[in-house]
Length: 126
Image (cartoon, rainbow, N blue to C red; front, top):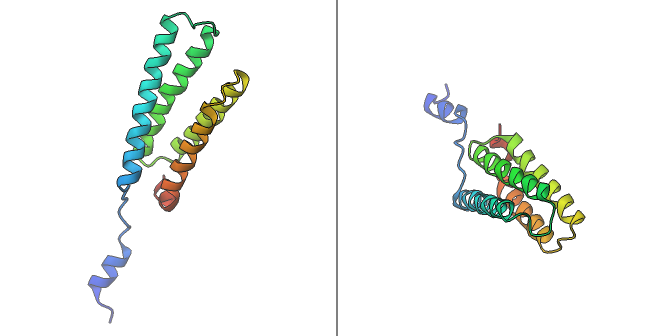
């Protein structure tokens, strides 16, 4: 007859443990989206500084969505990771149109680090 204590331990689901690196990365991501949104608001108030004003409204929307998606990554939502991916693609398109060469490598590195940190925890996403 099997030991009931061992059976009970093996049937319990593993606890979702985010880890310190992923937690720190998510907090940093949320803070950077908040700072970027404040910068977009500042540029909207300043009149766009030669760029179309609609560009900064789109960037502000992207930053707000980034904060929301990052929050839901804390809640282990898989669609939030897809949302972050869409933000990275949309930002790439905007940066390509306006020929901003510095931001694209930063976006790629940021997204790759996020995927690497989530790599062992993808089965926790709902």
